[in-house]
Length: 232
Ligand code: SF4
Ligand code: SF4
Image (tube, rainbow, N blue to C red; front, side):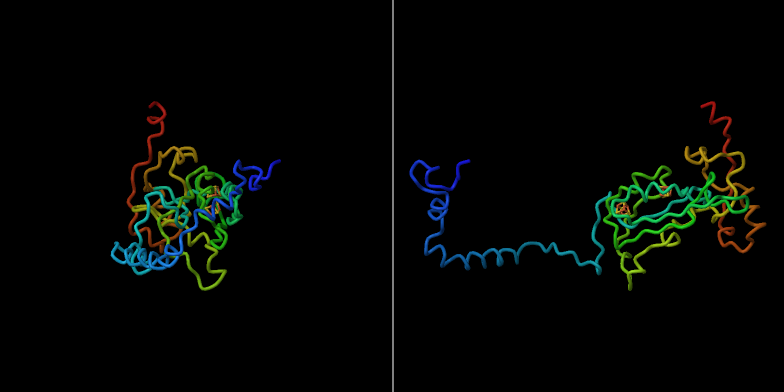
């Protein structure tokens, strides 16, 4: 292989280094170089300031900004997470830890058989790539616009637990656990057939957790007519 910088590789016997020397600024140019640098600084003084004043002023975020995660609920308040761990397996930073448990009569946290009993995201590891939310089959996990809460006094404070990530109970819904809407299966929840809490669910929570604060705001709706939906 020929050395590209060797004199032999150039017709006039000049190397590239010789050409660069020829392009070097003159003595006068070198004298005024610092002044030119100040010129850039001075001209910038009169341009609009673009420095973000965070945390005093919240920055304008892009519509699809990936912020803190959220564990979502269905409209009746049941949790969407089924504890499948697909998010944890998809995470390239090994930032998610999930432990599933079985739903039981009287302790139904999500539609179907399983729910996420333990759910942790380690924000010291998370790189906000969003691969976990792509992997989630029930849209239980999404990312919010929240950026200003990801600080903590200790390493442990940046490991968010399920209660830190769980979305508030939807308007008119009931906190979990409570039975699924009568006559429905988990697939009906996935297909969006459940639009709110029913009177039977309200009665169940009233009987088992009369002190539950979400009872005061629960607004029962009619159970979905699944036979009619199947026809359509
Ligand atoms: S956003 Fe990326 S790094 Fe963070 S928990 Fe999800 S998959 Fe892991
Ligand atoms: S958040 Fe989604 S992917 Fe992760 S365990 Fe729950 S259901 Fe599965």
